[in-house]
Amino acid sequence: MEQRKIKTPDQRQEPKDRRHLRLFLVNLLIIVLVLFGVGLLRGDNQLVVEAAVVNLRTGPGISYNVDQQLPQGTQLTILEEKNNWYKVSLADGSKGWIANWLIGNTTASPNTNIAATVKADNTKLRKTGSSDGEVTQTLTKGTSVTITLQQDNWSQVQVDDQEGWIKSSELTITTSPTTDSTATTDSSATTASDQQTQTIYTRETSTNVRTDASVNSDIVTTLEQGIGVKVLETSGDWFKIETPDGQTGWVANWVMDYQKTSNALVTSIAEATIMLDAGHGGEDGGASTKNERYNEKDLTLSTVKKVQAALEKTGAKVLLTRDDDSSVGLVARSDMSNAQKPDVFISIHYDATEDANIATGTHTFYYYDRDQQLATIVNRHLADLPLKNNGASFNDLSVTRENTQPALLLELGYLSTDSDVSYIITDSYQQQVADAITAGLTEYFQ
Ligand SMILES: [Zn+2]
Image 1 (tube, helix red, strand yellow):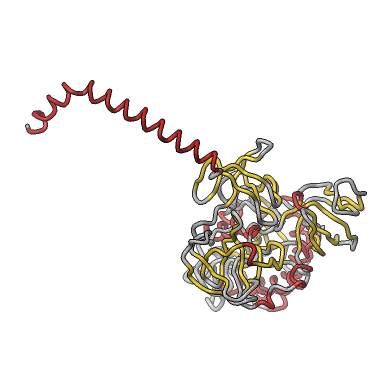
Image 2: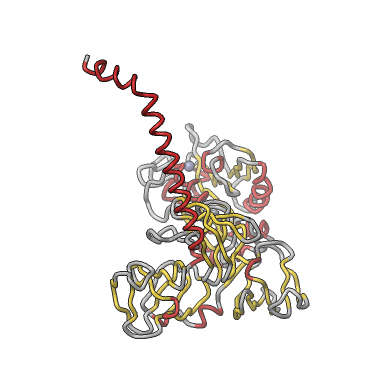
């Protein structure tokens, strides 16, 4: 009842109110436009890249591809801001996203972290990048910091766990961008030798290595995509590098990446990252022998540890979905693979049938056609094992199906079959498995 009483006069006045509202909005728009225009004139939305290099990405997040790397001095216009990222345009009209690390640093791209030291005693760390900014700490000469952003002659830095701003002129840059996202107070941690051992990667096929730091100089050699090269020194937008076969020359920083991209070519097992998945674990024991003395979860873990040791001897990097008797869900396993993007994912299992002693031997399973070649090669080496080889075949299994990476699931014998068990439980069989997988992957990556 009350609502109806109020409603009647409101409805009558509506046209007049609407007019007022429209006038108000027009005025507001004019005010906003004027303010925005002044902002433009003052250059509030202009940025100059002051770091050695900043990644321009296709979207607002580090999971987006790097479109190009912007060298120091590049002028940018900010178009919009989203989730701590700026959408910017370049002088040539191209657009992309760069990180704006105003809040926290946990999602910072390692590519933008630059190690530096404080030049003098009593250097002030401020809350904001301005001489008026509140001083939160006074730093001594030589204190190591990590620069996460440089803007208008100020550097946003991390010192231990603290974040703040220091005048860029009060810092000495000690290394090129590093992958270490944590600052350190140990100044010995950022020495010239760190820089000498830094590896960067070619982004494109046919990357030219030149005699000098200029696109007009002669070409020493060209490199395939994803080749890691050692940085010897930097000059302007150029790196002096050493190629894997020992040649030296110069490459432009805009054709190089600080980390290997997921589609980079791995040309030997020593460059590969392998994720090993010990099936089951924790509350999920998997299959067991008839006498229940041996559980699948323990045998897969001991086997995985032998495979890990054998692979690491070749120089490969090994990641594990579990390294102890913990419960890990099936989806969590493929999620780990999809997040860490190993070059190959291998899940290790031992099989069982309900009735005893009716099945024997090993199986190599893959899901996607893309993994058939991997399966064939690895299985050919598993054929050296003393158990019957049942071949490589398709199977619809979660860890291979939900995997973005090349993935296999190996069933390495039957716990329900006495003759298989007599091998499976031995160190020597598990070592043979490790050697066979290593030989298979060595061939695969050649
Ligand atoms: Zn299993």
